[in-house]
Image (cartoon, rainbow, N blue to C red; front, side, top):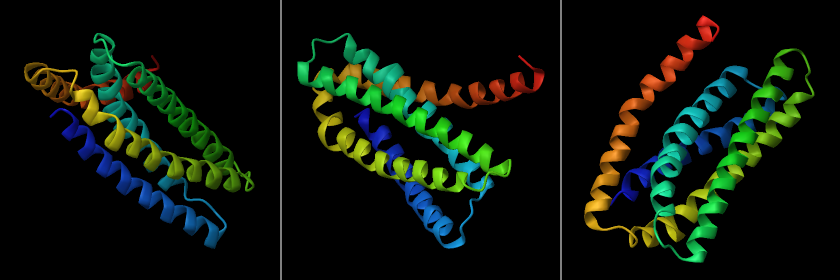
Length: 177
């Protein structure tokens, strides 16, 4: 089923959330933040959790569901999930801004960093459970076996092009575009 790769991706996201939780505890003990950790966590969230994982959901699964006569309940859940993706993006942007203030010498920004990271740590497990346990499996009923196979192929193609997209963006930033 096409949801298998999405659920496997959830397991990796859960591992990162556990690491982030540990980092929050370290910030509590030490009273400071690790900007390099935050950069790595932000990169993971933006590239893997958002662009790779949420990208497959939004660009493929949700788009294909929008072409189906799905129940009002499932349509509402898709809207909720999309709003949650936007919330995660906003929190990630706030984390970057707080880290930048911390690096610039605003030591009080560590409190904001902990708060935002805590919100992300609280957000993802609930979001993942909603998808894994209440949404993915029922939504597969809207697709034929052939459509599911095509969706799996689309996921693979999406993943194959993702690394090129990421590093094309890196080069364009260096080029000033």
